[in-house]
Amino acid sequence: MIGLTATDSVRATNYPPMQEKLTVRFWGVRGSIPCPGLHTVRYGGNTPCVEVQAGHHKFIFDGGTGLRVLGQELLKQLPVEAHLLFSHTHWDHIQGFPFFAPAFMPGNRFHIYGMRASDGKTIEKRLTDQMLHPNFPVPLQIMGGSLNFHDLEAGQTIQVEDIIIRNTILNHPGGSVGYRLEWQGLTVTYVTDTEHFPDALDPNVLALADQAHILIYDSTYTDDEYHEVGNSKVGWGHSTWQEAIKIAKAAQVEQLILFHHDPLHNDVFLDEMGRQASCRHRNTLVAQEGLTITLTPNGKSSFQYADPVHAVSSVHE
Ligand SMILES: [Zn+2]
Ligand SMILES: [Zn+2]
Image 1 (cartoon, helix red, strand yellow):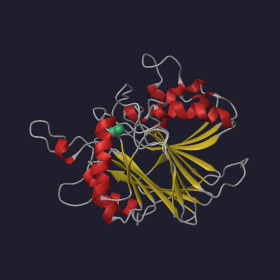
Image 2 (tube, rainbow, N blue to C red; image 1 turned 45 degrees about the vertical axis):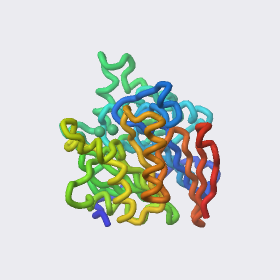
Image 3 (cartoon, protein in one colour; image 1 turned 135 degrees about the vertical axis):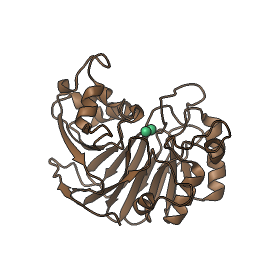
Image 4 (cartoon, protein in one colour; image 1 turned 180 degrees about the vertical axis):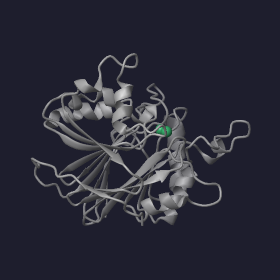
């Protein structure tokens, strides 16, 4: 288990009615750079953003361009309060934030978490700098919502009522943070932008993924691409779907989600990747925009897909 160095308790106000379920929804699943186009329609071209609704609390992992789309959905649910947790501040994880409409509106409240960047800048400073001239015309200070920034330490635990979020340092240039959310005996682990080790599974990742119901894992490359002669991706800070399966098996994960797709991987490629991965590990899915997974504390899970090819819903007992 990860060592705890501190606990922050954040109390939300104005609860909507209690919801006894946990829902994970994918708004952006792509790594590096948005890649909309005819060949990425089904899995989507937006960069990382994953929404987790646990009971009456909302969590958002990363603010890639998928955050803009989530923001449009949240406009139907005003006022909104959410906890926004950043893995790190590479562009693909923060570029949706300046376009996150609810943050501009008074009455909405966001708790924003992140670790200091490798240059020592806080998450507040990094998000502020992104919105300065000549990068962007509207400064962060114009945002009218309540923004509360929290600097995380490695191993620090966040507690929001009966929800616990742990974190760990990942292996990525400049650093990245993985998160593990626990609620009512259900666990979702979010591990993106990390590179596996050549000789052993990363103990930080194993601990964070231990017996998780859902593990979302950086599967940017295939093993062949990662080791490609003359075009090796070793040291680039990302992992492979084959390594995802090793972690899922070792950590006894219930459902593995392959995430942070390379922009070069089109729909056909990802279909085939999913087919191969499913043969190796039964409960494996390739993340796609609109995929929604619902878990209930009694062990039921259901899946909904947004795209027409995968547009079936299923229930697992
Ligand atoms: Zn990334
Ligand atoms: Zn990164």
